[in-house]
Figure 1 (tube, rainbow, N blue to C red):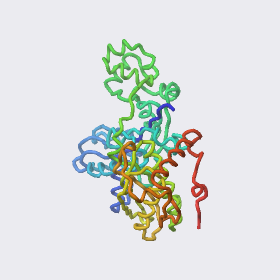
Figure 2 (figure 1 turned 180 degrees about the horizontal axis):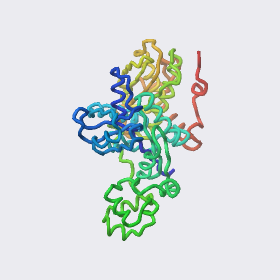
Figure 3 (figure 1 turned 60 degrees about the horizontal axis):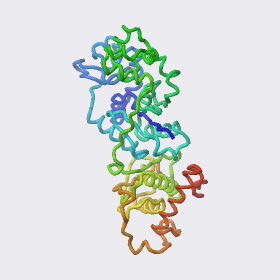
Figure 4 (figure 1 turned 30 degrees about the vertical axis):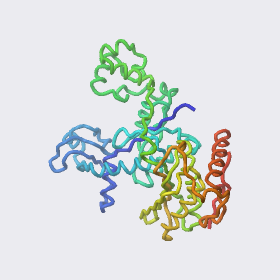
Length: 411
């Protein structure tokens, strides 16, 4: 499978984050629904526009222009000063959520990142389905929206995320550039700034397609090495990859916002089993084992609680993670209906490192009070998981599914 890359970009990040904070502190105004900007000082009316609402954009206000200009375009414009501490916190929340979905992230700014789809491809029916899941999780858990661009090239994923907004997914694969990208004005191309646009216009290059078909030697004569970069981007040429942080630094986890609040333990542990399978598969795919497991619960009151424990031996086994998660859940849950469940693994080790087994790992079968069912020993569990992974790899992720996941029990 060719690489597939997501570019995830927050819609009007500063404005969205300020709007959420204001409403959480009692404001009846949602900055996203009125002509509003973030930037400068509201009292002194100086500085530049850092972010704008869609209604403000309708007045012709653009990011980077002086606030005084923006106010001339829209006399009733609402202005809020930036709160960078708030923005850093919101950014951290989003990156944590995304790393729980897929650890292979490259953060490029406070409000955008690239994600390698490969580690999670078996968990979703398609890249667009994965993007829909990500957008939904961010909207429902964090309260703001993102655009996601999908491509086989980083620069094209970035371009795709800038298409129609907000809260949308767009694709721009290499074979789609002539249809979707070439008709756009050259100013839309990534890294093509105002000075470059002026130079290209003088050369009668008006669209990205014009640029892609231009003589490279003429471009480099006028724009030096930057001209070559723009020409390559216009032709979808970009061999860069997602520069991810080490999985050991972040751990591997997953969470799910429930369509209907879980009111019973039986309902909750069904989802814990599903999450355990997902986390375990990702650990094995990354050739990692985890020594620490944590469980997070968000109640329908939006209160969050979490608990973690250290395992006797690092594992990537679904059963071990599930049993541990059930025990943590039983310690945490106070009976309040549940809106979200999450499992996270940390303290990761290479799967190739030798593990010192305890005497309790030797019996072929053991009983656990959490599930009331026998479970396999550490060694046999690893052998079984390996065999199941092999079957799924050959015949598809759904080739083998636990019976308990096929028909979740209801009240």
